[in-house]
Image 1 (cartoon, helix red, strand yellow):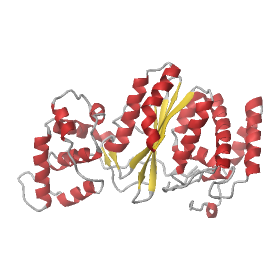
Image 2 (cartoon, rainbow, N blue to C red):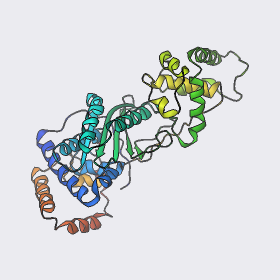
Image 3 (cartoon, rainbow, N blue to C red):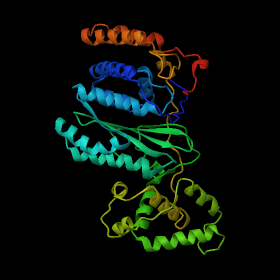
Length: 379
């Protein structure tokens, strides 16, 4: 399963006749998965971007669309709300993402888990992909998967309206949230990314906390000094061999430089022990972190990573041949064929006797690759 999917931003909707079939097929696949691999194994697969995209293609969603994330996670959430498989989903797209804490508390209570723990994880992973890692993509979708054993996965997505592309972030049972925390990131690599959670960013994180703890006064002066450097004024601690204008352009390409004085006053009072706690401060946004990082780089000569952590340019296009695609790529969905597949899998789930047949079919088709001419971008 190799290749490239751009995940372009698409509008539109799934027609009711297709959505109802997607729910039936997704329910059958999830039952087979939980039965075969358990809930933890199911979460591991959902946190694999290639597997996730294959699941999306299998149920008939567009093979290369931003809807791969929003529709597929929405379908899975609906299915797991009805089925008792020991696995539930919170969150979703837009305003639904803001319901995540409430829904997580309800799910945790049902499973006998500590809800606050998972609410904190939810907030933290969202802050990492909004503030700590900046690539020009704005987070607009956040889905949290939790099983009754306390295993979790997050699938969230950001958009870049200017490039008309989406990027998907996958998390699974992370223990360290500020050092290379992702299970995977799916999308096109950017030339550079402000990445303060890269493995090599430990020293930078410590320096950033020290700078922030000095309060807003000194930081304002440092920013004014940098602006003077950009205008060509010489200052006594100007870094040697550094193109200050180029550095400033790189930061400003990600958005405005801002200082939230309330956040900085709070930091000055102390009590923040580590970078995780720093990221969770309410009011800390990407603009403030950009300003802090710029001061760290140009005044203190401590540099963040600019490595984009994308791991998967994904494209399991072959799975779109199961029933076809919503936008007729690689072919139009035939309702009868879709219904026949559902009936077959219903029989497999009910009798549990034909699973070896499924495994043998998988072996036969493992090496098959679809014709490149069929791989038409979704309109």
